[in-house]
Length: 350
Image 1 (cartoon, rainbow, N blue to C red):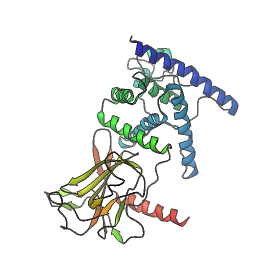
Image 2: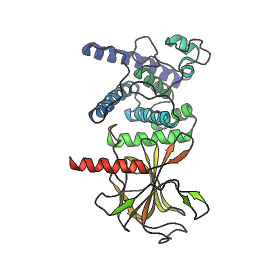
Image 3: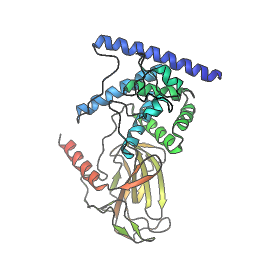
Image 4: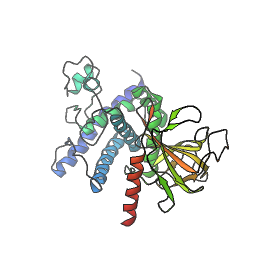
């Protein structure tokens, strides 16, 4: 065993004991058990804010004891939440979405698929760890699942490069590492989990029209399916980010003309095409954006070599693509646009 691995294991064991003391003390003061019960589904508004606060508290505790920044833990948890949705995987009850199968938790050769004994779990090579010091490694416990993930990452270290290595070892997928790194940057920039508000992609006061055009046929460049919604507006109308996210790409695409791609915290790729130009003062690849931020302007670029324009009326092509960890696929943005348009109007009336 290397010295680094020995120190990492010692840190994990020490962290477990300290975390147990912290949670135990807090529970005694509050008159509730150390191992948190499964959380009910949050309600809108205040319920969601309370849920974000509870998750943040868990991330902060484990961060303090392991040295892994809270936003890195939050990014892993959020990525797991998006995988649960994309893969239609049953999400764990509670605040933390990190998913383990019974075989991953207890060990492939473990005859007890509901094993909670840390010693036997280790014996059979399982990943499950006791995070709150109650002597049980419970797969249904938020803190145990989160601490298990932190313990695995801690084996590599706590620097940004160490964490990327740990994520690669865990997921064996560079896309997963990139997505989690992006999520961590967004959380770190705003220092909060409450980053899931959306706005409409065009100013509500502008003159625009749109309808559902997803799935319609297109002919330029060969037969293909339209993977978005076209929003018709005047040339130069501001185009806004619908979400908190990070700019993945911007530049020319023969089909989309001047286009921008933004990845949000739900692991959804937002594609804005046919722009007349970019807001280069605020937007470039790798930059973090927020809802309502102007990223470019409506145009009619595309269907040709760089600079081609005017082959169709000015409009914004807006597409949404979900990532399942291996690939992206298009889904209809129209219902989401209607929802965000309605929500923004309601917010303005308050």
